[in-house]
Image (cartoon, rainbow, N blue to C red; front, side, top):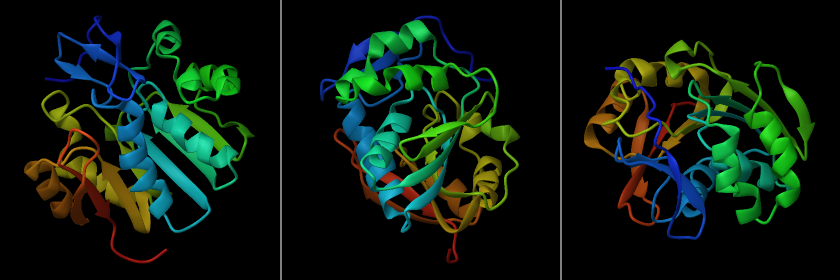
Length: 229
C-alpha cells in the first residue's frame, strides 16, 4: 500500500537536543530519537559528502523531509569546504508551521539561514535557487520512482522512511535507478542496514559495505557504484 502521510506529526526533542517530527500513528520519526543532528552528520556528511573526494559535489537527497541534511551540507559550504549542487526529492513537503516548530537553524547556531532556508523548503517550482554560500538548491516534488537521471550525482543521501513504512522505496528497481543516477565511483549512503536492503543494493549493481552506525544504531550502509570519477 503506498505511503499516506498521517496528520499527527509533532515536534519531538531528540537525544542531542535537536528536534525531529514523530508520528505515533506510524510509530516513526524523520530522524533518530537518539540525536537528529548526530545521525545526519554521521550518515550523510561524514560517510557521504566528506568521502566524495572532491570539493565540487552534486548531491541528490531522497527524502528532503525537514531539511536537516540540507542545512548540515549548507553549513559545510558556508565554511568554505565545498561547493554543492543539491537536488532534493520530496513528494510530501513538510508544512511551514512544522518547520518553524523544529527551529533547525537556531539549533545549528545559524539563525541567519532561517529565511533563505524557509524560502527553499517552501519552493513551489523545480527551478534552481540562487546560490548562497557555495550551495545551489532545487526541490522536486517528486518520488524517487520518477527519477530518470543518469550519471548526474556524486553522492545520494537516501533518507526515506524505513522499509516498514515505505517498502516501495527500498527495492531493486529503485536502487537500479540510483545506480544509474550516480557517476562511477559515486556513493549512496543511508541509515538503514537491513539485510534485504543490502541484498537489493547488490542486485542493482552496487558494492555495499556496512559501517558503524550513528548513536542508537549498530550499522549503516554505504553503497558505491563501481568505477572511478
